[in-house]
Length: 391
Image 1: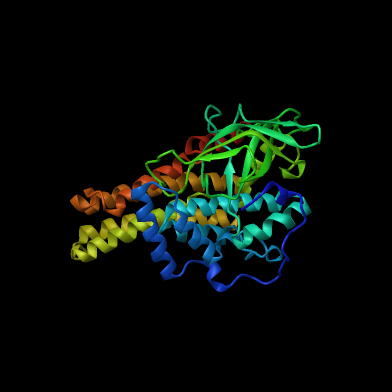
Image 2: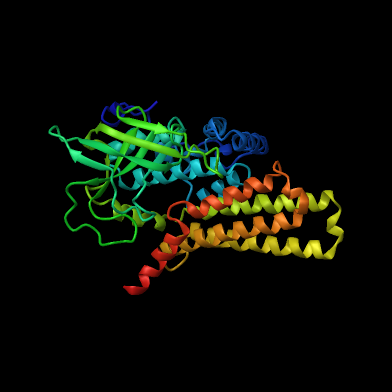
């Protein structure tokens, strides 16, 4: 379990240049089957999917976003999106936990001090620790402005955090949280308004067992029910200055740079769309419907939606667009909308079979809708794209 001391005590494990074993590049059939079973169980119970997390640790997939020198696999954004898509096909909740872990790992790699990287990244790469983002909060809006969570300096040079975060994925499961807080001293020359976050906000890495940090998983969602999405509060939560990620007041510029990485939540949507398409094919073949031209043509139309979404996500991951950040926003918008259209089309094709509560198409639909609401939400994505037109 993570502890506050782990941010300051130089007890990092030895680094390695050796890549992880082959299974770290993607789940094999047996793992996929077990993850699918976990998804079905967690959807019924609404409880955090601890078994799926254990499987992610077992596969080595948690280290995909980090280079060999920290014990990772050194995958690029395209590789990360592919892994997230493959997991989403069988367990969307697990894919969201994985995506968030990758996002925090990458921010530490990009903005952490050499000492912080050496102390944290090997643990994250091995899967000993799971990372989560604690950015959202009630009243701050999708653009994360007007935060009520604050961080103030202490006489010893550290910080004390106070506030509450909502809709935090992996709440109660994560070993370390990337917490967004309003600080009292914005950095000089802070970045202008980027549409997401604001000047004077700072990121802090807070280990799960830091006194004052409390997760609450009582939130019950309609979709992504195994993702442990809940609340995280920080009250009189003391952390050293070494827990700070990036410059004081510079969180907005870090957030703005996230979309340039090429990693996209659209990959989750593509995985869900592919799962729905596979379900449609299985249904059609089992019922002998592929003999009907109309059914075959409907399946072709649905497959076209999936392929188009996958192409947009792949372009984003390869960072070949003139503006990779804008491409990332478009990929989330298009893929999440496409996934909902695909699920709706498959529901109609299934007919009364899809109206049975136990049919997995219903879970796919609820999970697909959740992606549109994740940060940046689809409405905020549109705002972030259109803001560039006025500059």
